[in-house]
Image (spheres, rainbow, N blue to C red):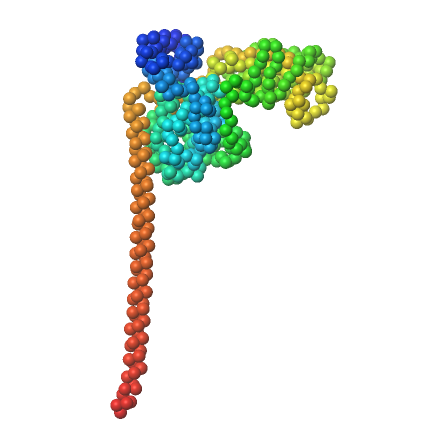
Length: 489
C-alpha cells in the first residue's frame, strides 16, 4: 500500500520542531548545522516531506531522523564533496556510476560488482564516493528516488563485501529518506542464491517487494531494451566514461529559458527570433495534466494560422519527465494537430508545476519532407523562432501508480528492524566464511580421493604383476619336469 502524502500542517509542525531543536541543541554540532541544510529546512517543503513519507508520517520518528541526518551531514562533510575532495580514480574506474533510467523514470545507480574486490581499496574513500553520487543524483533529479542496479555478472565470493553493502543500505535507511525505488540484482551467481533467499526471509514485506532478481530476458520489466546496456542484453552501446558534474545547471539534456530568448534545447540546438509566424495554441499558457486510468496526461492543439508551411517543435525543461507525441511535425496553412503530453510513471506531482514547455516554429518551403530531413533541419535551426511558452499544472487526483512510493527499503520505526539488519549482515558474512571453509575442505577431499584412486590403481597393478610372475614360474616348472625324468631314465 502506497503511503499517504503528508499534509501542509504536518510539514509545518516538523519544520517548527526541527528548527526548535536546532536552536536548543545546535551548539552540540561543531560549527552548527551546515547553512545549506538549514536553508532546506527553512525555505522548502520537499526535504521535510521525504522524512515524513519515509517514516509513515510519524512526526517524532521524522524529527529524530532529520536531526540525525543534519548532524551526520555536517560531520561527514556531505555538502563539501566534489570531484576534488574524493578519490577521482575511484570515480573513474567504473565500479559505480549513474546512467539511464528505469521504466518508472528513475535514475539508475549502477554498481559493477566485478570491479570491486574486498580489501583492495580504502573503504572510507569508497564511502565518500557513494555519498558524492547520492548528492549528485539528488541535485540532478530534484530529490526524486533512484534505483540501485547491482550488475553481478562475472562476480564471485571475492567481490562480496558485506561492510561496503551494509554501509550502502544504511545510507538509504538513515540519511536519505524516501530515496529508493527498486533494487535490481542482475545475473546473480548461483553460489549466492542460498544467501539471498535467507536474506529475503528476514526482510519486512515492503522491503522484499523492492528487491528484484533479473537477467537479460526479464530486465525489460524494469528497464526498456533501448535504455539497457548491451552487456545487459539491451540496445544501448554506452561505454562508461566519467563526466564531472555540471554544477552550473547547463547540462546537455536540460532546457533553460531566459526571460526574453530561447535557450538551448535537449540536443543543444539554438533558436533565433524570427517574427511573423502565426500558430494558434490552445490552451495558450497552461498545460493541465489529468489522471486517465494509470497515466497522467495533458494535451494542446496547434493550428497553422499563417499562409506559409510551418514546422513546429516542442521543448521542455525536463525532457526525462515527459513523453510527447508528436514532438515535431509539419503544418500546412489551416492545418491543425493535437499534441499529447504524458508523464513518465514515478515522477512526483509536486515537481510538475515547476516545469515549462516551449513551442517553436520554423517556415518551410515545402511540406514534402522526411522525418530525418526535418530532424536535421531543426538541428541547424537557423530560422527557428519562439512561438509560446506554457506552464504545467495538475488537476484532480493522481493515478494510483503515479503516487509516491516509500523510498526506505529497510525503513522501519522499530528497533527490531535494526536488529534484523545487523543479524542479516552478520549471518551472511558467516555464510560466506562457511562457504570458503567448505571449498577448502572439498579441495582436500579431492586430493585425498585422487590419492586413494592412485593407491588402489598401484595395488591392482602390483597384484596383476605378482600373478603374472607366479604364472610364469609355474609354467617353467611344468616344462622342466619331463626333461628331468628323461635324464634319470
